Length: 323
Ligand SMILES: NC(=O)c1ccc[n+]([C@@H]2O[C@H](COP(=O)([O-])OP(=O)(O)OC[C@H]3O[C@@H](n4cnc5c(N)ncnc54)[C@H](OP(=O)(O)O)[C@@H]3O)[C@@H](O)[C@H]2O)c1
Image (cartoon, rainbow, N blue to C red; front, side, top):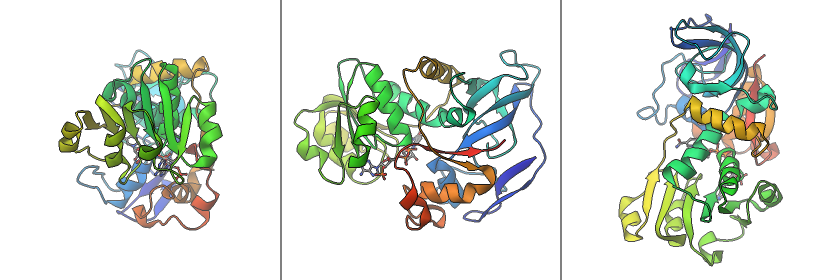
């Protein structure tokens, strides 16, 4: 099969033939239709965080996919060849024509979504769900501040929080205001024009932080006592949290086929929707990585200048079409 591989940390991605994977009894062989690009792919490839995110080289990147079940292991009862599925990977990466994956990490693809849209869903939507509900304990009637609301994770957080009956405030660039209001944000603060802690009059119950830098530290100032600061990007100072009488935690996504199944229902009934910015062919992965590197300067030797970020739409996932 054809696959994209990294041969050495920080090296070029190569597109060539590798053996088609075999499956264990609890696994499924999926013919991949699409996969999506995540910041983590580039971080892993750079080797910059190899203690936390180790990879075995040569390595096939890709944490999420959509596709068709080709074959099932003898212990798999829930899926059969021909089923359209989507999910997160459980070992090998999804930048490939075929993928071996555990049945527990996948769900049926929502019938109203294209394979490209479906591949953009699993990581961002589950991160958003777990960030705001599992870690943030968000409830109906509460107020949440989402930093990076127009990003891949942020857009699901906005939609899920709004659907749960919370008041949603998001920070984003001003140009994303109309988009964010269309998916449920009540208020958008342009991070390039204003400091949220200066313009917010009321304190919030939950902060969900999806960006790096000092935004996280400043967020303590806008939290109600007893509130939650959840970060997807960096550890939360427990001393600061205690000083402000709030709880704080850095989340770590724990993907689950059951959760993805619940998210699939929300997608199918139109309660939430995916957002795909750009679709590239798998062999054009280098350009796709340049695009996403605009939000991740310095990683994998890429800089935010050049053709990628300048032309990149500011919201939505970057998807790779495999077949
Ligand atoms: N811990 C976990 O389990 C986990 C899981 C998934 C993702 N993550 C991490 O979560 C982060 C977000 O992921 P993503 O896929 O949503 O990234 P993304 O799609 O690149 O979104 C980031 C968003 O933040 C915006 N932004 C940049 N600077 C900002 C600022 N100062 N204030 C407000 N918004 C700002 C960006 O917009 P512009 O730059 O266009 O203005 C962009 O819309 C990444 O760091 C990723 O690695 C963690």
